[in-house]
Every structure is written in C-alpha cells, then in structure tokens.
Image (tube, rainbow, N blue to C red; front, side, top):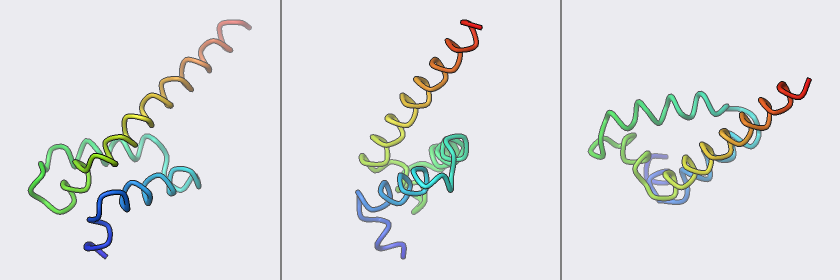
Length: 79
C-alpha cells in the first residue's frame, strides 16, 4: 500500500476523495498536514505531505475553506 500511495497524484486523490465524500473534514486534514509538516520530508508519511499534488490540494482546500467562512459570515451580518 505504501508503494501505491507514494506515487505522487495517488495520495492527493485519496485525500480529496475522502474529503469529497465527507468522510474526513477540513479540520482533520489540516491537523494531519501540521503533524506531517513537523515530521519533515524524510519519513514516509511526511513525504506524502510534501508531494506537489498534495500541496496543491491543501492550498485549494484552504482557499475553499476561507471562501466558505467568508460566505457564512456575510449571511450572519445581513440578519
């Protein structure tokens, strides 16, 4: 399994699918990312974090999460 997940776009696909199916939420993904960032690139789990496709997904997720937060706050202000 580690060999398959270690291939660059594969792990991003798994992470994105878990998020899209609402199995894992943004908070859990960001917490995972923080832990992996501290591990560095040498560990097998840390290496998954540093893959470019994973970084692209995390960046997209953060932007998407920020947009959702700002949308929700606008609705609360208009009441």
